[in-house]
Length: 122
Length: 238
Image (cartoon, rainbow over all chains, first blue to last red; front, side, top):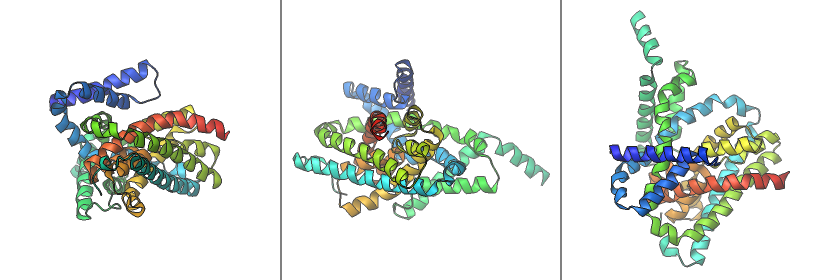
């Protein structure tokens, strides 16, 4: 468990160093995610070590958003004066993005005959 | 009474209290969500935030005081983002086979997320500042704030929009996919992560591990796509 925790922190750190060093527009953890994926692809044995901790963290991903989301309520003043356009834009755009993404994904997969790979039915 | 007051003064200023409150509120929210059979509206983030916000309001606690304790939870967002590599590698063969649907959905979905947010806000009379700050609302907070800063938006405003988008997406993805009769977990998860980043991904993992895997992939890819697309779309817009 300690090794897995170390690996996650190490790759986040490596990501931060890469992002800052190369002045990339992508945050460190996202680079760390790519670096860890490369390591695990090259060295599958490491997966068994990291898997339990990674899965445990991801199972409670919702929890990690709570502190920042509580902060949003404090920012209500910023949003209040234009609440209507902002609220409508967020809802319409999120729904549109969800629908377009899922429908395009499925249509292309079906067209290419990949229906068996798109996963068990929900 | 004097002692109780002193104890409160001591505890309310220490990280321990608000860290415990955050975990407790989340556990309670999880229990409520489970009792509601993980119905979309019983979103654990939303319930936990409501509980914590109510408590902060009742005790007149300022957000920075709360965050001093809750930051330990917030910090784990970084390692959790790195951890998304694990399910991705586990499903590597499937991802490789589905690379074309993934890229097509990424291009279409990312463009839709940016253009519709800007277009609707602009049509309803939002200020240009707000319109630009809305553009990266579907991507994870640090990327979105960077995009806003680089393109004339207001990063603090963008951070608020990103979290609101996450909650809207997390709540609506299941009913919307059912309505559209999209049943495949790869497509559903990819849409959740693309449109509503980490909170959508958290919802996807709650429903199905394969959905969560594709949500995490979409979160990362859309971060990249949106950083490239926003300046391009703004150039066309202006």
